[in-house]
Amino acid sequence: MAEVQVNSMETSQKPGGNVDAVIVGAGFAGLYMLHRMHGLGLSARLFEAGSSVGGTWFWNRYPGARCDVESLEYSYQFSEELQQEWVWTERYAPQSEILQYLNHVADRFALRRDIYLNTRVQAAIFDEATQRWTIETSTGDRVSAKFCVMATGCLSSTNTPHFTGLERFAGSSYHTGNWPHEGVDFTDKRVGVIGTGSSGIQSIPLIAQQASHLFVFQRTPTYTIPAHNGPLDSEVERAIKANYANFREQNKQMLFGVDFQYNEASALETTPEERQREYEERWTYGGLPFLGAFADLLFSKEANDTAAEFVREKIRAIVHDPTIAEQLAPRTVVGCKRLCVDTGYYDTFNRSNVTLVEVSDSPIEEITEHGLRVKGKEYELDAIVFATGFDAMTGSLLKIDIRGKGGRSLKEAWAEGPRTYLGVATVGFPNLFTITGPGSPSVLTNMIPSIEQHVEWIADCIRYMCDHGFACIEPTLAAQDAWVDHVNEVAGATLYPTCNSWYLGANIPGKPRVFMPYIGFPPYVQKCNDVAAKGYAGFLLIRGHDGEREVELSRG
Image 1 (cartoon, one colour):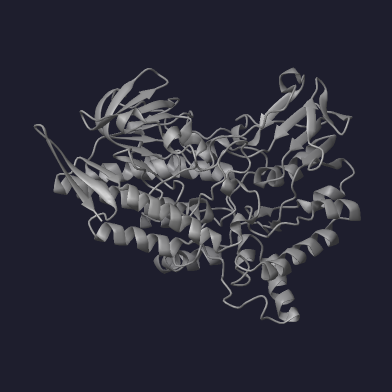
Image 2 (tube, rainbow, N blue to C red):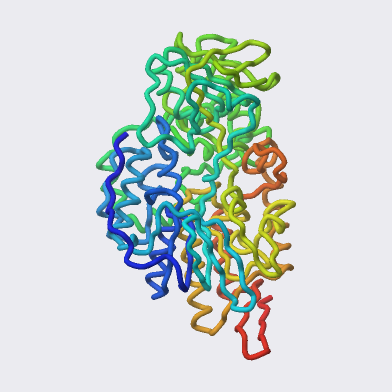
């Protein structure tokens, strides 16, 4: 894959010194946050560990990497001109095209002058005396900022489980979340892919076309719906662009902030014939809207069973070997783990050069010099691909030494699981904002509208503080506790917590089992709007130092 050519102009300012805000991460969230800071007339620095903007779309370059939300929805809507001028080529945009889009945004809105690449933020320390954050970077720079905004992404901290013997493997190894920019040629190679989540499901069909033999090591089978991807229909594009505002507004009213073409009917109250017809239409259309087939799929196990069995029957019809088909057929609830979208995934297991290896009951014993061993059998490999996902939602935040009032670290504050108010702020960490953090809809939505909603809320909050002379803001403990309880209560009314998913942190050994996303985009947005309308109810607003006196206002 060719490297995206970007504007190489250096920033005109030194990264050190004092600024109004520091932003961490140059993906969709960080770029828009920087744009909004410029709009407020505030000085800002954005630090990015990679050598280009792009966030997850900079790092995830594995074969077949593409978005599972349709292009015309997975894009910014803050600029009508940008919406109209950018032309997507495919129904589901590939990684390379999304990266080109983000570089275009960085140039179009003159963001690069405040972006510092190849710079990892190592620490963010709150100074109670000055009421400012001190940011320390991998390049040795220190920046003082009134506000610190974490745009580190929900799926950006790669997870490679500990495998005995990995260091002695003589072949090549890769993680889908940190793929070589020059690409990888697997021609005539014996390849092992560990993991069958989204990145595994997207990459396996393409790797199989190159490899002399592909071994897929599966711990848990995953539900995946065909994408039916192809060139973007120009008539569809014209129709949507002619009425983009209404299209976006309609989607914001959907449970997940994306057009799932929701059917309000109950699967259990529908005749078997009508139910089958609805599922067939969804399968033929393709993608995530399969979850919108019936209103009760994520709330009733009996209703969900009808969808699960439909997908299992599809797997049995596609995969020729009945034993392999049953191994690929999930037994969990459809949707309790991230539903995947694929191109030719199940068909791949009909190839003579593909072997499925079950490791659910007998995990991988060790990685050897020449491959890996399962159930006492060694599989000889030239390359291993770790499609093992991420330390979702909290991983990237907790890799940074973030310390708030009293020197307490975020890692300590979240020792029993992440605790936030609205997913944007945490008690004891004044003026620290997290974009799409735990406790917000984030990964259970179309991420871009969720990102824009958070950025705009944070920008409005900062403007309110500036207009009213407030120096600091942080949640009250009562508001934070009530919000965490509410997030858990909403999740508990659904089927989401019924399986071991990364939504719960279950893929990371020792990580507290807490359901992290908030379910329901429209009610969440309404709650955020209500909080702001009431002068930031649930937050403690501090006017700042006045000699020895500090004035605090608690908005209950």
